[in-house]
Image (tube, one colour):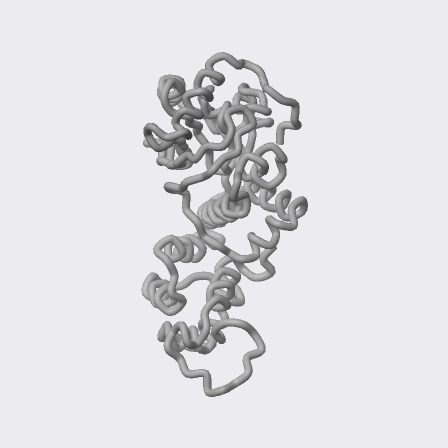
Length: 295
């Protein structure tokens, strides 16, 4: 876990990945004790004093102006997603109210949409902590047939996608490129924690994954930022074999902390045929097809 502020830890991780050559600074033939840029070099590139930048990185400067954040984003060659993350970390430090543990609910209209989509598209709804709030039969059959279909209906026992990826053996086996999937999960969790710093349930999830998974600890310490959007995954499904699906994530209107996640395959491909077989299976199987502990 971070020993400095989240903002300071992110800045430190981002400067560590750059060299003077990357940003056009001379080396002067010196031997560096740490990887990446020095603090004073980042300060020079951003046009701020070395003392100010040091206080920011050490957590002794709570916030920075938008102009300074933009300058730091340019100096550290941040991607658009990383720049947004930098803003989240700066603006939320100690200023957002704690998120309550109130039950997250899926609207009746969204549940109807999920059911209607089941004939064509595997889909699920996830909440602000990556809990599965609801899924259709096909989405359940694609991602977690070893779990109870009704598990999302229990707020205390809902499957959590992040926990499944790191701690659930069938989910790990499902992903051909598990490391890439795991890095994406961690990158998304970084964004969620920056946007919801007062969420004690989310903090508890991070603490659990950090304690139980050395792989999670290593990826978490890298401070990678990866927003959900569109991704392609090759799955090794226990019922229909290997298939490649495109995962897309959409914000749910009027529910800012909920997302609709869908899975599709290239038309006419073997993966489409596998999904069709899975849809039939999803319509006919009401119980788990294998036994495994619910995360």
